[in-house]
Length: 226
Image (cartoon, rainbow, N blue to C red):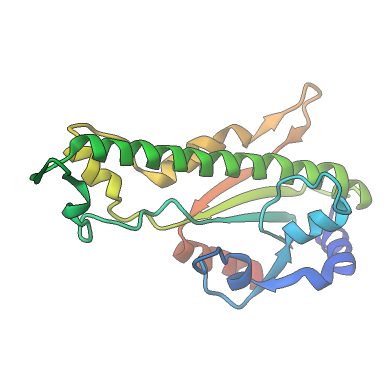
């Protein structure tokens, strides 16, 4: 499957879904990657392919160059709004003794943060799985098979930068320790989808998975436009 085959098919059928990265990475509250280069909106491609019926989860964007297909999911929500530098101790004061920090309240906030993180990780896993199914079952069959080599499918998750999470502070207050390395959590969650083979030896799922900050992604995506 050459670039001409897959890119030509996507460009011929879904050119109207080319959008700036800034728009593709926009959440309700912020733009994750401020970049005017255009990628295909894979959410809209998926909706179009399935004609609005039982539309699966999908990555935010798709791009093709050479023998690589890049799917990207922009995921905000990992970065905590309150850091060690901005933590307002008054929000953790015990209602019965305002001179003390309420460790139980801190623990509740930690548990809430863990739940939110797990929901984000589950969302990424579903998008990785169902995006690949859309490629494998709906797009690849419409493109000629490669004459030489193989196509590589890459899934990239772009997440908030991790900077001094509120969870670190609350964990100390609660007398415990938790692993708050967001990038490693995301990497571990998606690692099962790399380099798998079927019984007949055929590759399926992803050849590579990348976890990046918005800054790293801007540098990384440049190679696809060179």
